Length: 272
Image 1 (tube, one colour):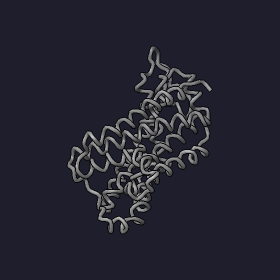
Image 2 (cartoon, helix red, strand yellow; image 1 turned 90 degrees about the horizontal axis):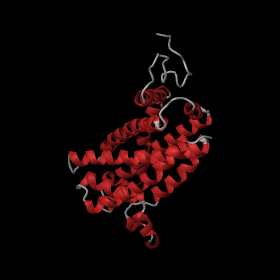
Image 3 (cartoon, one colour; image 1 turned 180 degrees about the horizontal axis):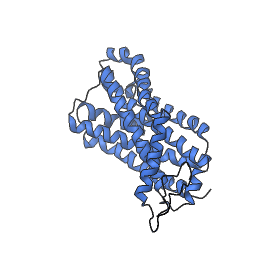
Image 4 (cartoon, rainbow, N blue to C red; image 1 turned 90 degrees about the vertical axis):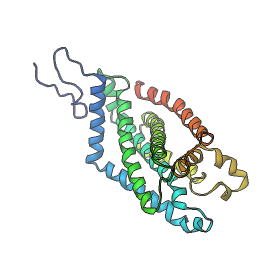
């Protein structure tokens, strides 16, 4: 048996020079995912992922809670979906920066020259993003509990709330990963993704009811994806979501999957 062959600092765990032994795609995925998660842990990114929901909770809940209380709205229940969605958007931006950094430093190109499964790097980044999303979602629910948010509809709906939230985060991460691979500019990506996220968030029913907007813009506010996701999540937490409410968010989610998945795969495997 020959001694282990070190490929490089970022890919050392992917290959071992053994006779007639080739690492499986799963082993490669596990090694790459572990590398990304370890980097996030050592650089404090997971701590930031846990603190960010606190910033969203305080920034969104405190300014409007008394105004909404006068309107008879339990604002902790009302605003929690948009806090969670903004938390998932944070994961999206982190994934975009990661893929852009790997493309910029040449790691993506280097991995393409090695006998690694075609979709392993992409799936590793998405899996690591899922870990970040779970950390952020857990923190968001804890902070939400502190301001009075509760899962009134029961355990099953609470699980559905979490699964749907993570699904939204994963789909957004796919699109962001593609954008990061194509632009190769971590700095400009933050600006490019922050603006539409803020616009869609503010022009949604996540912060205030539809009736609070001017009549001419209410159709857009009501039907855009952030509002539809908010409606579904709010019902999952409060009374239990019905199919009549859920099918529109699922259509939006399915449409984003169809749009983002091929783009993310193409951007990940293309030769620069």
